[in-house]
Image 1 (cartoon, one colour):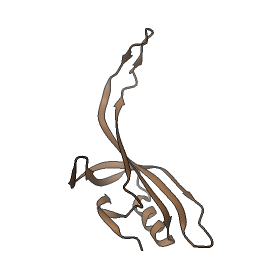
Image 2 (cartoon, helix red, strand yellow):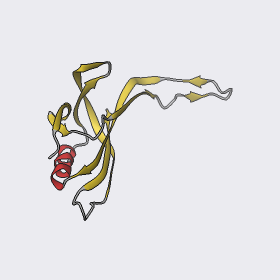
Image 3 (cartoon, rainbow, N blue to C red):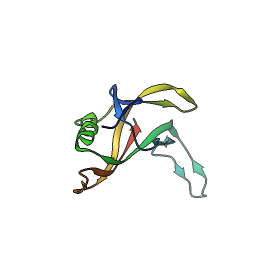
Length: 124
């Protein structure tokens, strides 16, 4: 069984340790009336700044590990997500988030493992 890590949590429950540190990015959200005018000048109305996205990847998971992961998100449109603070590796913070773009390769019948399970967690 894969170890669990407390610095990544969904509703207070630790995520299984990913194969590599999750990729993360932050982006501003623009209002619907943002955009370029007829002369090509960009007009931005920023609704929120630095909305986080974290990408998790597991090269292989047992049935039990996959079931645990799926259970963390089952029936939840959103959840609390705890993650390390950018720039302070000893601190964590919690935000409201949702799961997006979940994918996997079908179960390997020879090894019994699920392969290349990936998903994103996006801040609400």
